Length: 293
Image 1 (cartoon, helix red, strand yellow):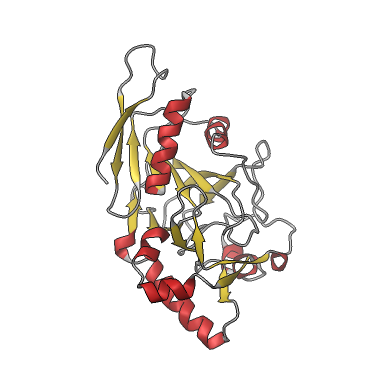
Image 2 (cartoon, rainbow, N blue to C red; image 1 turned 60 degrees about the horizontal axis):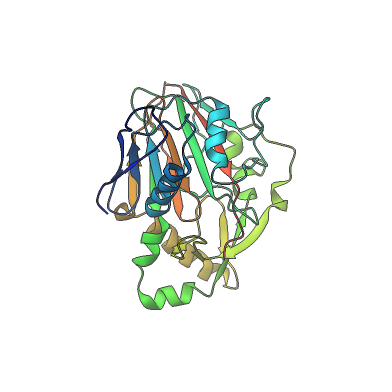
């Protein structure tokens, strides 16, 4: 998809600069320049941003200066903000998660390929992450298009998968001794992760674009429903490896003031922890979604 331009009328008292949407890779991601997300965006400008989000699944904005309130205002243009059931938000804004990796942390929050909170009956529509303190090197985030991953499958496999559901459980990450509980960035809430277990379609239809996408992930998917354990393990192993092949991905390099929003309905992501000895601080909000179909 080639780069496109549009104008954000009302952002400037003079003639506005063109806003440019430049793809990051052949399958997923775009960088949007010329937008101040802290401004009162005109509706036509916001709708153009939303369309870029639907087209590219991941959108990146550089050089932003956002307070938590401004980040939340932008997020609310997409829908109601969500609260994380296992991580406490800030004292003043419980929807906001300050995710900090200290120089001596051995684990980071968001490491490993996953899709956010698929253990919910109505998983989040999207996540909005803002860079505050960024390592001098390392700390990139990888994203993978689950639409592209599904499209690349053969027709017989697509047909087989379209009739299946899979179980997703918060316990895989948040039960006692599970990976996420060992991260210093975590502040577990008093919630039983085993209560957050749900089945979703293995192939999800995007509610806005109508495109189909794989909807299993290594973070929370525990098994394919209705199959013997060996069959489920074999199929899941194939799907999880296929879903994050290089040709479906893009890589985002962070800077202070970078804001990235991704579509949890059709994207997996992986926060790399390759910046040992450095501190990383990012601020996250999420937008509520609906039941996958």
